[in-house]
Amino acid sequence: MKKEEKVVVLVLLQVLVLVMGLCESSISSSPYVDQMHNRRKSMLSEPTSSLALHRVGSSIVLPVHGNVYPIGYYNVTLNIGQPPKPYYLDPDTGSDLTWLQCDAPCVSCTEAPHPYYRLNNNLVACSDPLCKALYPPGEHRCEIPEQCDYEVQYADGGSSIGVLVKDVFSIKLSNGMQLNPRLPLGCGYDQIPNPAPHPFDGVLGLGKGESSIVSQLSRQGLVRNVIGHCLSGRGGGYLFFGDGPYDSSRLLWTSMSHHHPEHYSPGSAELMFGGKTTGIKNLVLAFDTGSSYTYLNSQAYEALTTLVKKELSGRSLTEASDDRSLSICWSGRKPFKSLKDVKKYFKPLALSFINGGKAKIQYDLPPEAYLIISSKGNVCLGILNGTEAGQGSLNIIGDISMQDKMVIFDNEKKLIGWMPANCDRVPKSKTDSI
Ligand SMILES: *[C@@H]1O[C@H](CO)[C@@H](O)[C@H](O)[C@H]1NC(C)=O
Ligand SMILES: *[C@@H]1O[C@H](CO)[C@@H](O)[C@H](O)[C@H]1NC(C)=O
Image (cartoon, rainbow, N blue to C red; front, side, top):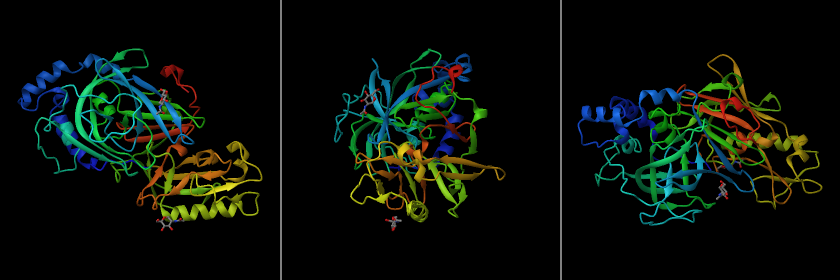
């Protein structure tokens, strides 16, 4: 399901301007100290310009575990705290805040693979710009000045309430250099699980907001504010921050839409079916790793399912209404073992974008990017009715449709790029690029 922070990030542009005005003071210093003093202090305590030079070309690569089906989620391991402890996090490009289930104590926590995180006198004050960045304009209130309360609600029904802290993340750059930056983190003591809960320690927020750890790493001059992922159709893959293991001339790039600043949205597209136009136009899209499947609005979903069903009529596949793995499944004469068995029955789909008013560029969706083989040996459509799932008119490109591609969100150039890729092997350095 699409995850989305309730706290709207529209405010972030304003906050960014404010924060830039304060220079790095937002990162570590007390808000009660006067601004000039803050600025001097932060210049000394934050990474210096010589370190900032390393920023170009530096990257952080993290292996990803999990798959779309049957597991239904991915996880990334991060080491946080002093001494560092491992946590399994759910990577989510649909939200900003990274948080851990937290024994603050817990009001309501869910099952987690590791012991809950514990507070360590490391609260972020309410007046910190990082705290303000978590609230919509005009809604930031300080009931207790010493702490920053947050609440994130995800579109799949899950939520987390907690307080903002800062702690040390132990992260290795791909060149082997060890980084120990202090980064913002939610201590979540009151969680409502989504309808299909799985055990995890927290969420890795990869949205473009100021509170995301990649924004903060970039602010500290450690990596460029770029997030990329490569999810393998065979499960696993990797995630990277900064100047990752890719050659940008080999990717297709499109601008991030200004109309949807809270999402990684490439704007609107037309759906193509078997290389032909479908008339399903103006689909407002957003990329979201927090969603396993892809969602189209009711109208587009209906048009697509009609086309797929028409294509299958007279073939040996029959609708398997007893298989509730996903909304629509089809069975064959005997159970299918892999997508190779069914590829020939399904046409490739594509999303066609007008790039900068000139050339059209396509995001290809081969059958592997929209079908799964269920445990019953049927083939099921991994594109679901977004209107039914409460996504409104937004169309979500979920994990299933991002498999076997390098997908990159360059928050500095405001570009989204992609290319087909083999995501099975985690690259060790830029020279080892795919
Ligand atoms: C997360 O990934 C680790 C490997 O780093 C794996 O051992 C673990 O089972 C995964 N956890 C979950 C909850 O999937
Ligand atoms: C999609 O969901 C909406 C809202 O629940 C519903 O009205 C519509 O009939 C559904 N469309 C299809 C094709 O199932």
